[in-house]
Length: 293
Length: 177
Image 1 (tube, rainbow over the protein chains, first blue to last red):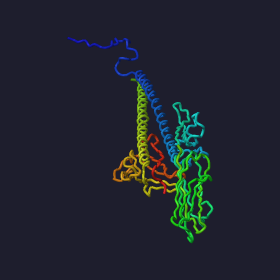
Image 2 (tube, rainbow over the protein chains, first blue to last red; image 1 turned 30 degrees about the vertical axis):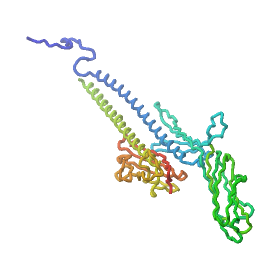
Image 3 (cartoon, chains in turn purple, yellow; image 1 turned 90 degrees about the vertical axis):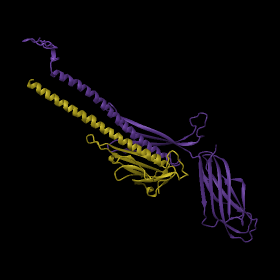
Image 4 (cartoon, rainbow over the protein chains, first blue to last red; image 1 turned 90 degrees about the horizontal axis):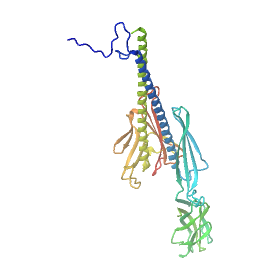
């Protein structure tokens, strides 16, 4: 029995021209199929290429931003390491730039302003609160966007350095010439200061004496020392027997020393006896100023 | 096939091969370049973060790691700091450890503890360089550290290079002689 072969497509009859259009369905690839396939492939590649290009742009933008953040972070740390007094508002703004090998340039600017706590509060008088230095760091750089246009970008960081809650001051006197103790009050040492907030003070002073001539000095003969703030006399005066103690120490507290006003601490001494030649050997004074609550 | 068809097909195949090669060149090479660059960037950032966190609680800086007050740059930093960086006890030195940051002979940027334990911060194949600087005028407890590294995979003439700088503040000691 002869099996008739079945063809999927009609074979073209002998001498006939009944052939499927564009060669589709015949064995192998025709040139049109190849061309159309290449066109479609090209469109796909172009689409992927655009996505790749956008990805590279975003990567570069991310890289630039990351570097700018690093620069700003470094600058803010540098200025946070400075003391309150070292942050001089008048010298601000500080500027600089960093150029990289691939010609990228990052410009930085640091601005220091003085502000007061509570300034924005309408119920608070301006500059009554605790002062602080407000540090602003801006790092700017240029970058291209997806469209190829150059844009100016920046990274901004802020931080504060508050006014110290505790201050210490110290003065020391080692006289080159003799400083005798007389019967009238004379100044041994002074210590000027000025704070930006109201403070309570703890004042400690020490005086070492040298007795050059102890003739006729009685056991009850006394050296008096007094410590004054801005010329006002405290009602506490130390009394030290001359012969018993070569070292005089005293500590006293002063409350509510006003802000923004120059003050002077003065230590004076005198003796109640005409006899004896007593000179100052060494003196020092220490102030511990704490923030008044 | 006719001769013209053969020529056209040959040309089209050449174009196809060139396209495939370009795809390989641009996509894969570029991706490798970018991947390595961000790997390097990650290692450099990790190194800087480690230095910053450990130096913050440093109690003592070794004499050979102290800086000249006129400004100086060093390649090694030795100091004594907290064993546990999250438990800072400046008054108690018994829980401290000696630390060193430097580039060793095989090129690795490492953090070495006094006990001999080391941690590789940036791999030697990236040729890391570290520089600790003090600039005159800065506070004595503030230095900057710069870490540079160069990659191995190139894209055209470009070789991935990463350089980052971080400011380091010491809370309990000064860095200046």
